[in-house]
Length: 286
Image (cartoon, rainbow, N blue to C red):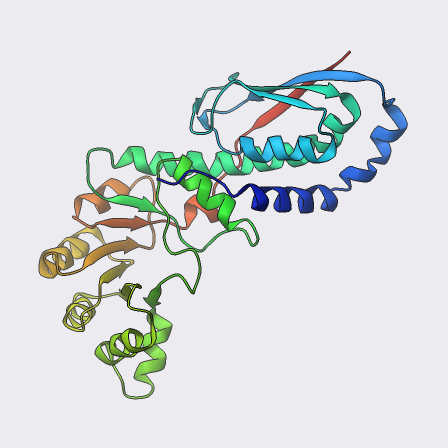
């Protein structure tokens, strides 16, 4: 698992967030906190969950004042309980306060994604299926949210539209309007795409799955099927292609889905619906 973040990406995204928040012209702090005043604080978890986002916190403080010292007490991926001490921060108080919100926003958001992912991963423990994300991410934050998915024990689907062939229902509808079917769509994808890319086809029925396998698809995406329908398709496919379950995946049904025998379970909810983890920064001026 590649659990690293591109430092340049982190700096760029954090800088944009700080500028959006007016952190370099924080009129309240400039008016009320003298430049020479120092302070320290501690990041505290108020929820149980999985920690993710400390590199963004570090980058936020470094961007406003390199003299701020962040000392992590835990690492990304650590399990949190209410009251867990995550990190301490110390240095000039004014820039600490100016960067506080941006640092917390990233920490809360990414920890929420990691927590949601870990819940699904834990629910299918002992079964071979992988939990993966989707492209249903916050615009501009995809690489960060995919990192949080990995921290939570999940895996990544294709990064973007150029990263893999996925023939979805609307692509097939366009093909059928021209009198073509799954076989022709797969053949067209193979002819146009680099040989290094897998061809995946979304299907919604047993018959479509049969057609996709016969067409030579590398991956069959079983969309919004119940576990029994998935199991029937998996048995028919019999290892000739990877199988992916997608649509309607919840904590309540994910184990039943995994027990159908699918190789991959993709969930958009781990990014588009993850609840931000409650984390606070308790500052003590000195």
